[in-house]
Image (tube, rainbow, N blue to C red; front, top):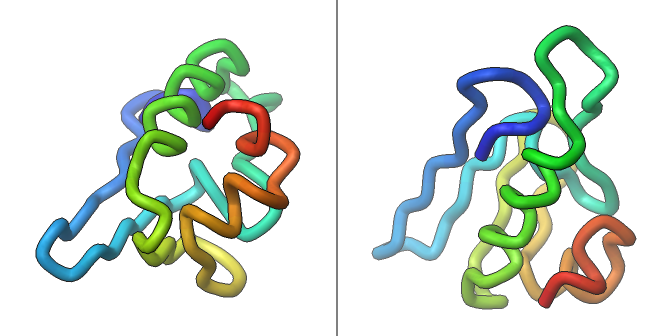
Length: 83
């Protein structure tokens, strides 16, 4: 899931419906793209991929509180229009 930084990944555990998003996706926002190697267009593509995941998947970000894909697709301004 590039965009925040080169080599950035998310790890999903399908059996447990868990998604570890690191600095790609946070509750209510996304990772910065203004640091060296950040790329807004790549992040937008990564977010489209994440928005296609089932809504019951629990999101564990690199910082801040956990959330779900359904919540983020509803309230996160970077994801709401992508589903």
